[in-house]
Length: 396
Figure 1 (cartoon, rainbow, N blue to C red):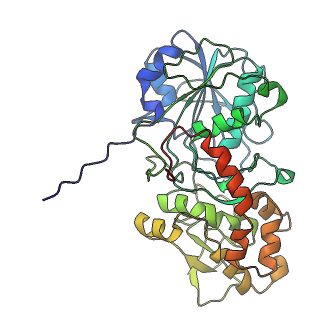
Figure 2: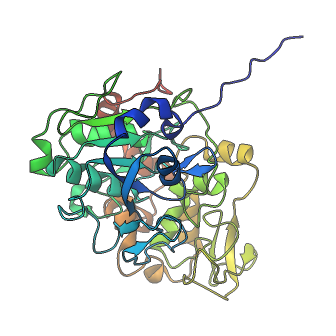
Figure 3: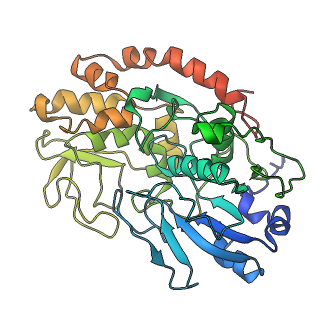
């Protein structure tokens, strides 16, 4: 009988405490974190404090430090009830730390679980934190985490004319990089502010020290590569409740730019989507307010559309390592009011990264034709991406 060797468990950078605790001792530490910033069963902030490390401030992204706020919900600064630490919200009108925010900080630590999708705003928060660290001469330690969608690269590359907080750089929707690799690309390609771009010390040291001014360090994951299918132990945000939603998210988040419900207010966001005006022979569901979606589209209305739920294995086969456009194209064809399908605020263009996708859908382009229009930009991005990979790639 042939024995199959078990794959060693993936260990996120935060859990490799022997690699970085000594770098933080005696420092005043500012931590960018949320509910995904876990060291086994304990939040990173609590872990650092228990180890005698001085944490002076918490910075939090979209959804807040505890990860319970709705998408887009405005958050103000607050106090963490458990630790008494000040929480500085870096979302809404205050996305980038100021010099005042960093006055009492010696070193910054970034530890957030990303999902590897351009319009998921944690990489935008990462960029602003990286810029602030360099501009204010604060060392930055990035605790890397696996990318659950890190096994492929696909989608339209953002046109910088459509730059926004949900897309700040010329990368495709699925960019196939961990948060640490992405940070190295931001720095290496000089995609930061002019002042931050003046700093050239971006190398990742094998035995890092944190005493070098302007130094950016990444603590790598162990036993991870870009063929890995990593199951997130903590939901990264209220509407990504299952791995199935995370796998479908790059494809079905386009519906946020339409009048259709993308499943917010159900137990399977981004796996269910539909609208009351679509044919009644389709799958039906009724979205209602819940803890992660206090307000959204089509609440209390019976919607007709699609249910893409299934096992993780089934969903992975359906996604098949690429963005699936057929649902957007079919929904548009079946929708009776073509002029009202896309939201009037052109949010679809921010999601897609240009106005081309909406035009292609309206023109009746096929999925193959649309995908072909991505080829040149994707090829260029993949060349850039390879320079910053810290782990074995799925193409090698």
